Image (cartoon, rainbow, N blue to C red):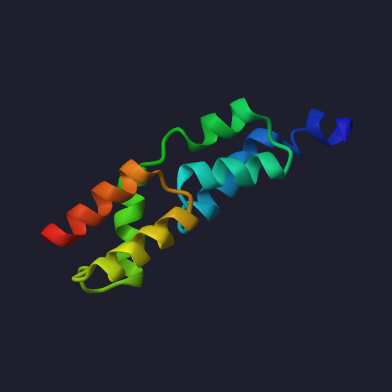
Length: 104
């Protein structure tokens, strides 16, 4: 493994960047960091890999893909909140994304 790292064929940094890119389509930064940590990437590198993600924009995109109409009932709003929580978004991000979705 040392030979591969020495010849730049194996890199935790490159793995973290690529995995972040793949997961960012579906998940928030917190969930991606957990996934990277589970794969053995250190916390600092996982944090740097997810630093450039815009969680609010990503949450809005995910909501728009899954739900085409704004939430009209409290039950539907709660369902969307749980959905985004399972995707690793913070409550503040979820609150803003749901509010923005209702305003549109």
